[in-house]
Length: 127
Image (cartoon, rainbow, N blue to C red; front, side, top):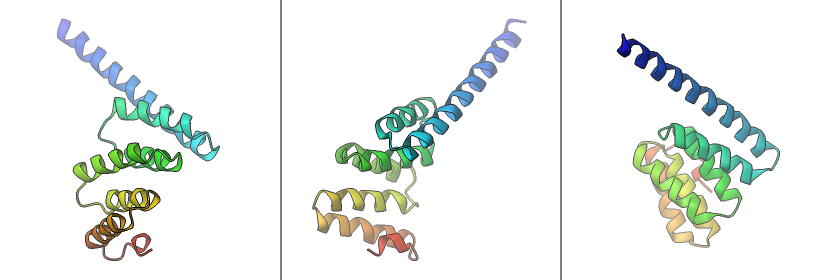
């Protein structure tokens, strides 16, 4: 009988985590749209703490960090994304954008070329 209650508790905990993540994503998007970027970072980090494998959330977090000028933090997020989603052009493009913002044009170009290699029609990388 105890195992049945343990399963219900686990399901209930998971349901609460999903609800919390959904709420945090909504808050992060609202904060981002309102220009409250530090709050958006806080909310996106809550989600990544609950569900570390959500690509879109990590990408959004990296984008907000870039907007805040927190280049090294953004670069770390894009680097992790590249490790977890090696077929996606977004991490390479994001890394290129950060490197360009840092004045590292040659390194940025390498990443833009990588984004194009992964997706030849990726227009954003043709800057």
